Amino acid sequence: MATSPQPESPRAALVTGGGGGVGRAVAARLVENGWLVGLLGRDARRLEAAVGELGARAFAFPGDVTKRDDVEAAVASLADQGAAPRVLIHAAGLARSSAVLPPDDELWDATMAVNATGAWIGATACLPAMLAEGDGDIVFIASTAALRGYRYTAAYVASKHAVLGLARALAADVGPKGVRVHVVCPGFLDTPMTDQTVARIVATSRLDAAAVRASLAAMNRSGRLIRPEEVAELILTRLHDSVDDPEPAVLE
Image 1 (cartoon, rainbow, N blue to C red):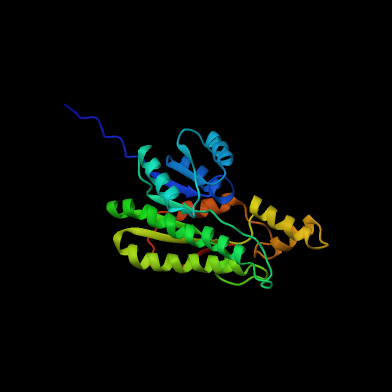
Image 2 (spheres, rainbow, N blue to C red):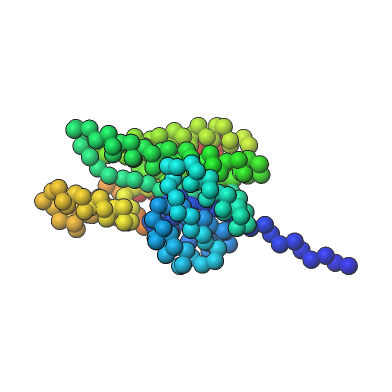
């Protein structure tokens, strides 16, 4: 008697910062491709709204990427839904501008916590299941700020350089064990985070919002702001690619 084919095991991904911007766009593409997707972020209402749009394969996990208990709880909850995350997308980020002097230590600490420590916590929370399977992808959303410096963004630039260094170190540790580490470095994006940056610049300058947006867009090689969907598409094409040294994929 012929046996019925066994259903394919579900694939799961955890997306930090999944309530909007690049995180939300990546989550949508993963759901379209049949993945179970957990969205982790601090704004529960944004997460629930995203899940409402993405459908039954998406799950909201309100939490803070800087708190290991929150991240590990999200990993466990996603596993309870059908599969441990085989992919981590660290898209959570904090970007605020400040002059070097007077020093804003609170801004420095908060930026490093979300962008760099959050990447570390997310990766190390997901790695045990990936290593157990001998397969997985860790994707850090960095920035062109991981590759060069910008004025008034010392904390942000330092945090994104740290993410790139973390990716290279992790790749050396876990790459031989089947876990690939990727870094995506977009330029200035057309996202709510950029809208907030524009608003802050407008509040402290004589420029209007349109002029500020145009100046940010001009810093990209394309001369325009990058759409989150473009970053998401780039990430989807890189998943499961062999990576020996995670040289960043730059999108400007």
